[in-house]
Every structure is written in structure tokens, then in C-alpha cells.
Picture 1 (cartoon, rainbow, N blue to C red):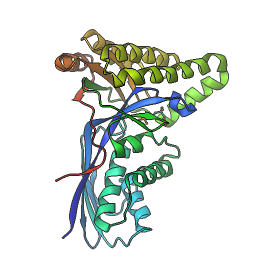
Picture 2: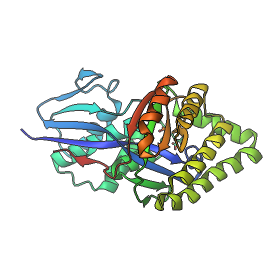
Picture 3: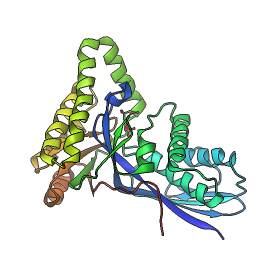
Picture 4: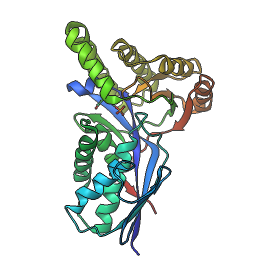
Length: 304
Ligand code: PMV
């Protein structure tokens, strides 16, 4: 029996979501919340996770089924059994779909000897996300494949940051597509107002780059808080997100802002390593689910 387990991480945005849609810079980090896919060669297709045990079921497992379909064009896959487990909350802007897609691609790639390199995996993962979602930026799949801290669209790796990171999940579903289209509408109606806001967000990422390299967390935090103000100005915050953001700041975080599309989903707080518990409890008391994590250099990898 041939079995392999691969895992891939989720991601957060330090700077630049929404502005990146218009070609501005953003800084993203892979975080130590992973999706693991154990793949075993067999005679039929079986997929299992907390979502249920199924065969080739595109409604329950759209990303995994798309990977099987695409990779069947490269190699003969008679049967495969996939067991998925994940630390990443689904549909909350932390890149859960990219992580399961990338981990599955790498597991099949290694089991069936397809010879895909990391760049190929990121590209295939992006094309699958685009196929399923209609539109998707390459950021999630790229960061999940490569790990670390990445400036996009340049795809430039920066050094790791080692401060505390606390994620606050509002538990409220948000549609990335809807929020991106709301911003597009606002931009069309008020270009003289919105365009400079988006380019200022891009500028924050550029100034943030050097601060990340120098690990100047308080200064990064100041700029992230400005970024949050600008995200609020373009209408992608919500009362739930704002509550968690102010709770984290009051509990002593360097900074707190939305990560991803906004509207619901998650916020992140950067903290001194000593303050993570305090900030997490501030977020919990304000009604959020707090997740303490850190940045990881490990993109997709084999689990032993
Ligand atoms: O919420 P997420 O993880 O899907 O991130 C969306 C980020 C946006 O910049 C709003 C859209 C994009 O495709 O880059």
C-alpha cells in the first residue's frame, strides 16, 4: 500500500488586501495553521473529513475533486483514498480552500510521480481556485505553496516575523466576491476618493517591507492600524470585526486589522510574544473565537 501525508498552511494579510486587486503591493504571511491530506493509492475514490465520507463528490469536496480531475489528465489515477483534517476555519479568509488544494496536489504529485515543482503546484492550485470560485487572486495558493512572508504581486520573499499573532474569528460568513464587487462599485462612483485610498494602502505595504525586514513590530503595527482605517473607509469592515479589533488593541496588541476580504471572517492582531494570552482573552470576551498562531516558513510539505 502506498500512502503519503502532505500538509499546507493558511495565510493572513499584514497589508494590502483589496488594493492588491488593482495591482498594488500586499504583504502576506503563511501561518502555522495547516490542512493535512493523507493519500493512499486504492481501487476507488474515497474522500473523508469532518464534512463526511464520500466518493467523488464535487458538491462536498469541490477543490479536492477538481485536483483529482486535473491530475488524472497527467497520470492514470485508478483509485485514491484521501483523509483530510484541518486547523484552518473554513470560509473565513484564512485560505482554507487554497491549503486543501495545494496539499492534495502535492500528495498526488508525489504518489504518482507527476514531477510538478513548487511553481507548477502554485500555478495549478490557482487555476483550480479560479475554476471553482470564478475569480481568485494567486496570493493564497502561492503563499500556501511557498510558506513564509511574501510581498505580492512581486512574489518577493521577506524574512520571517517572530512576534505573536492572534487571529479573531467573528464566525460570520463573508463572500469575497461580494466585497470585491462592492469596492469596485465604490471605486467607479468616487474614483477621486477611492483611487488614492487604494494607492495609499499599496504605499503602506511598500513602507512595511523594510519594517518587516528589520522586525520593527511597533512600527509595523502603527501602519497596520492605518491600513485598517482605510479598509473601513472603503466599506469592508463590520461591527463584529470592529469590536474584535478594538478589544485586541485595548488588550495591548501592537495592531489589529481585518485580514482578507472583510465583512465578516477574521481579524488579526500583532502582539509582543508575552501578550498573546491577554490579547486572545480580550478577543474571546468581545465574542470572537481567538486562535493563537505564528508565522511559518513551511509551505507545502510531506508530514512524517
Ligand atoms: O478573504 P480572502 O482570503 O479570500 O482574501 C481576499 C483578498 C482580496 O484582496 C480582497 C481579494 C483578492 O482576490 O486578492
